[in-house]
Image 1 (cartoon, rainbow, N blue to C red):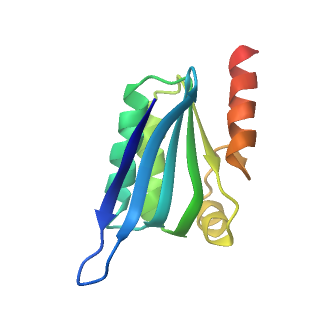
Image 2 (cartoon, one colour):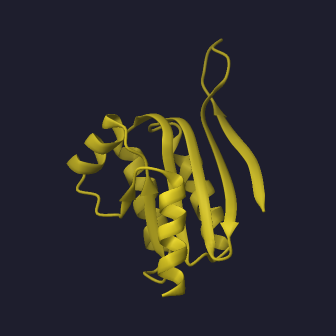
Length: 132
């Protein structure tokens, strides 16, 4: 089960969205929210809305795939923190992405979510944790 990407368009005459976010459920109990593009003050609300939609499906694990994110600001960290708070410690939130841009912001903001370098490893780890 998945939903189409929800784009957030940039201003002016520049074509294409700044951020596209898609939701999928690759395995029972695991939701994957995949973002592509830029996560900044203007697009973080879109990421937050899609994370809340993913949480509404009540997954045991929420994987946030940021592998295709080209810019990530502290506003994105805020969206992640709000999603984590909405889960009320009942479910785990894990991140996917290894870019220096992402790592730098997550490290500076002291984000302690489990991180994986690729989506397949994250989903596998989440499915193993869920069955343990």
